[in-house]
Length: 276
Image (cartoon, rainbow, N blue to C red; front, top):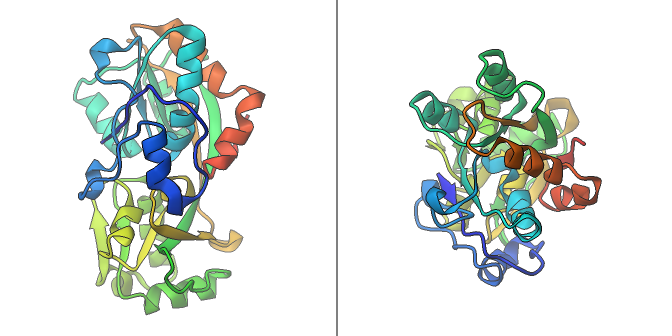
């Protein structure tokens, strides 16, 4: 699970190679040695926050950038946990509660159908694209076509992806469709959750596959780009107010704030395509 602290000011650094400096400037924790511990909380603890959020890793950078503005304008503190959608769904099924959930649209639709979200509270926030990254300064293989992606994956010594995340679920199906499932999985570094780019930055894998927005959160890697349109993996991230929210109006206010037209650029800078 990924958490971060909420008292951050100043402008986010847009360059992945300067990610560590950006983290220090905003008071954010740096990546730890384990891929599953690469993100922390926007507030120090849920009890100290006025608004609790369970969020996919995909919108982490945008939420980190916008949270201080919302806190300043409203006086509310935000406690956000970031993890793959499937992990968050499991935690909610086990009884964990929050005010707001930001997940894949499929998960939000499922929660809404089960009556676990307040009617009419869904807001589509962003579309995300799966990409590939290498260690900073490493040769940049071609991923401009499906054939090029296939060659690059087969030539790589190792490939990191997350089985629990939306990108990992997509990638597992993609390599099956490309007919290279066995070859890729024989050298894959599959993590349960977390940022695959962290493994590449540490030299533990040659390629990282994940949402571009999640790759952008990792210093020390170079992003090759999105997968080509013919095999692109596109995920829409949506938010919804949980039926058991302690702060439902504050949760609605945060969703409206995030989806304000003035914040489209912030989502774009985080590697996302605004959906509002």
